[in-house]
Image (cartoon, rainbow, N blue to C red; front, side, top):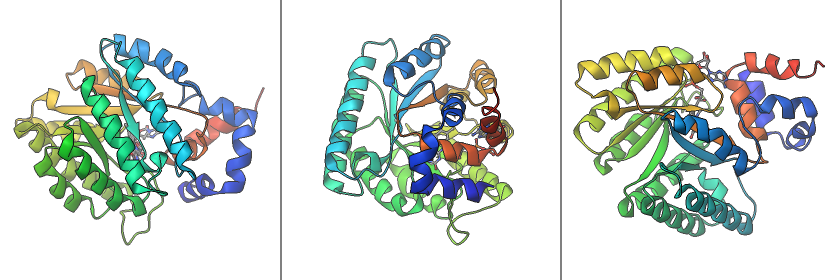
Length: 305
Ligand code: FDA
């Protein structure tokens, strides 16, 4: 089921048709407050009032023209400007291919530099999402360049990739912000763990290394997962290693395991909700379905009156 859904995420015929279907549009609302940024700000308000940190990501990936990348960059600049007026500005999370990485790396870096500068000025963070495996090395290289000039930038690393322990070792001397995630793409067994137990084991080991770095330096340690059992195990080990709770952050996606995130926040772990919005939600939504096949039944139920 997971492989089929991830294939559907990449299929351009389906990509042009499924998002127009009313039941699919209804189902996506569970994970996405709306297609425009106003809907994202509206959804963020009560969460921020409750003390959570907020991150925004505008959906879209693999652009085909640099004009589109310019438009995306201008959009995020406007989000940062608007968010500067809030008591706690939102953080932004971007896929490098959304800023033209496939077309012109220099343009992508220029946009990222400008956004990182603005984020730092208003006291917030810019995050680089991690995409499929061909983008891992280019994304880490972009991150290294950004981090040389800006403190408040972070990067997602995927625990399912066999290379990630080496990537983490490479980045730790920079005192990075790292959002550890399991990984959402369909990667071959030569480069990625494919069984949940292996991915969870890799996540746990990486998280402990990251947490110890956060204990001793300005490294920002983020567990980007809804897997509360895994978070509990990591929290227990981190506690034994003397990592204060406020150095271990938990970030979840909007609409998933909301109560669990509230519980972790109440227990003293900084909690963030990542809110996605935008018109180009199809591949992103299919990856959410692939993470939990029960969501497919939820989507199909929307066919019923
Ligand atoms: P797992 O899939 O094992 O799920 C644990 C439990 O959480 C499930 O049993 C279920 O209860 C619940 N759950 C998980 N997913 C759900 C869903 N879609 N619907 C309903 N319940 C669900 N990936 C990537 O490759 N690059 C990236 O940059 C990011 N960025 C990112 C940011 C943040 C804040 C999060 C939370 C996740 C990402 N991801 C990501 C996605 C990540 O790689 C992974 O695919 C998902 O988080 C699902 O894995 P879990 O860690 O939640 O565990």
